[in-house]
Length: 120
Image (cartoon, rainbow, N blue to C red; front, side, top):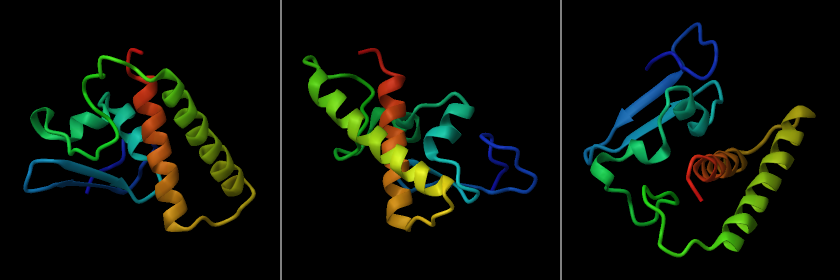
């Protein structure tokens, strides 16, 4: 446990876990997204995995494919931004989100962060 770098943390709320394959997981129990935590310390999502060994199903890669499907990237980005907008709107109105909804928002934020930090 540690103090989260992405918000003013008086008591440790950040869980950092290293797995047997040397992959790293970060979870802020105060609600910061993985993207926010990584941005606060200058890391990228791919930095959570050892020696460029990302899982096959991981949505972010260190290198871009030769042919970049811009239309697909923009379509996915639009869907992720819409999900984030709806989710934050619900939170702003005081609605509670399910764990599934929060995980979807976290995934959407990670994908948006990955797109924003890559050279397209």
